[in-house]
Image (cartoon, rainbow, N blue to C red):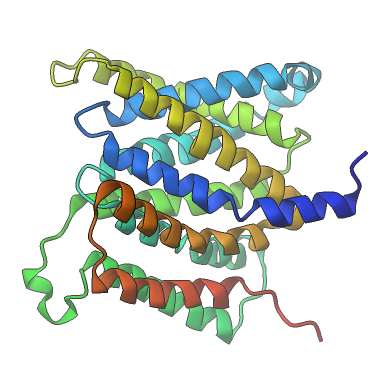
Length: 301
């Protein structure tokens, strides 16, 4: 039988796997253009992951049917934020921006989570966190403008970065709402219902893409991308994130997410041949310490 101490140790070890799994999603995103459309990929990803989760938690879901009928809107909202926006919009953005940009922009999400916790949930916020916010957000902008602060007019703005920014904000709201809306469901059952909400929102967009004349024909490679997205950054990362957050708290889980740029940079360089620019390195040098300052626990008095 597992004990609270053993679960704490297991969660503390597994959270280091989460950013590696999400980094895999950036590789899928960059591999998808010309193979499978964004909303179709997100729909396939969350339909498969959701079906497996619903099957695994069907007894608990039936037992909690009263809660589900009363709070259905929460799962629809969470599915929209976590699976529709954070899913499909990342794939839309990946058409025009690189995996390293995606990872670096996303790595600032704990900063927005901390800001939201202050403004929305009434948590404390000191001078150290304020410095961290400035550093992290400056780093994000440094990546977006490609380090060309003195020649902003000459910067070729990439639409994909805007999509990723929107997805990053959506992820912060998703994390905060999960904390605000307590649920009697376990990690698996809760994620299953969030997937259902996401699939409901994705379905009309996916069907529209499937019937579009510009959509490439379905292929073995498209199937592989859907399976990879569903099982690794989908089922694996989201379940581990939700379970670990319940065991050791949101702030400790969020801290490890700033490893995603390192994992993604190595994967993008090794698998996709993406060049690592100085603006990526400088952005990481600003974002990562900023996230650390924001999310480091307050010293006890």
